[in-house]
Amino acid sequence: MPANSALRRTFAVITALPLLTLAACGYGSDSKDDAAPKAKVAADAVKIDGLDSVRIGYFGNLTHATALVGNQKGFFQKALGATEAKYQVFNAGPSEIEALNSGSIDIGWIGPSPSINGYTKSKGTNLRIIGGSASGGVKLVVNPDKIKSIKDVKGKKIATPQLGNTQDVALLNWVAEQGWKVDAESGKGDVSVVRTDNKVTPDAYKAGSIDGAWVPEPTASKLVAEGAKVLLDEADLWPDKKFVITNIIVSQKFLKEHPKAVEAVLKASVDTNKWINANPDEAKAAANTQLGIDSGKELKPEVLDPAWNSIQFTNDPLAATLNTEAQHAVKAGLLEDPLLAGIYDLKLLNQVLAAAGESSVDDAGLGTK
View 1 (tube, rainbow, N blue to C red):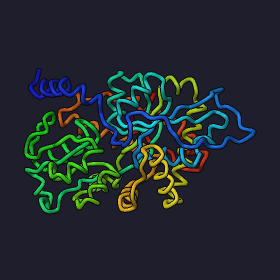
View 2: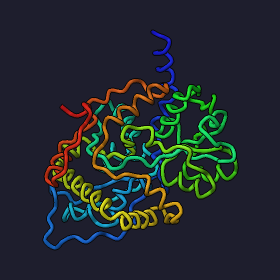
View 3: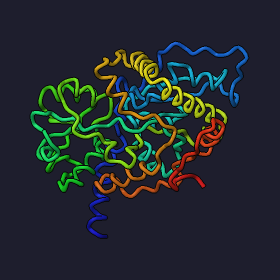
View 4: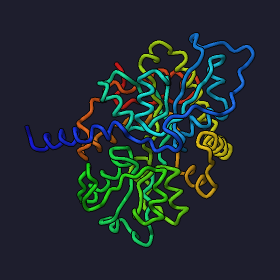
């Protein structure tokens, strides 16, 4: 066996557990039933696919604002008619994947790394990505007294949410592109990668135990509110400044048995994104209200405003960028080359988009046959 192949396999074994416990960068409890007031159901509404409810999972995170706003403004309930839209709020990717696998939820908003790992761990049997939701919203923010330019990052302590999560992989790839070396598993090397839960990263920054962080919103803007500066917006590293940060996934069983319900949720997602992009200020307020309901605390304007402005809401799953992110994880030694063929099924989404007079989206050759 070639040395590099053996090394990759060694890393895959060592990091298997962390990779299956990827954080999805949310806030609040690991799993929490939604406490928002129930959206009104029209008197003449009927159940879709005969279902009493459709259970939707998402994170208390602005990059999941399609789900936050769709819940708060009643878009999902409107599309589902007399079938109740039920919500569950998660804080970690594995919790949501586990809930999807066990049938506790039917559809979820989730990041690319949990999607990749959930799909590959099950050998392609547990989920499909059926749509996109958001792009961007990730930044490298640093202590300006210690880091004034990119070259100053060498030798410093930079936080990421968790070993092998989407931002961790992005930082490791960026570090390698600078010509620096870091042991992916330990985080030791020319840059010290410190895996830190987003909920405590601002305190770690204030205490001086980290010099910066590669994190999603609103954590990045929370650090800026504490005096940090944005050194790099990850969007600047991608073609057209777009990369997937949030997908919509569904269990394959639910997709097969209840396609009309899945189509209804996708229609609601498309309608929500259209409303968000047409009414950004009102949408931002709605997302923050739902964050407050889900986590018990709304974001302050100095955090909410810059965080919101760095996120693009899109129906396009940006499939090519998910494949690139997977290859970054392989290059870092955190993942064996994954077999992602079939991870996407965008047929229903493209039907919804066509009905709405919008352009179809592409699966980058990773769709179902």
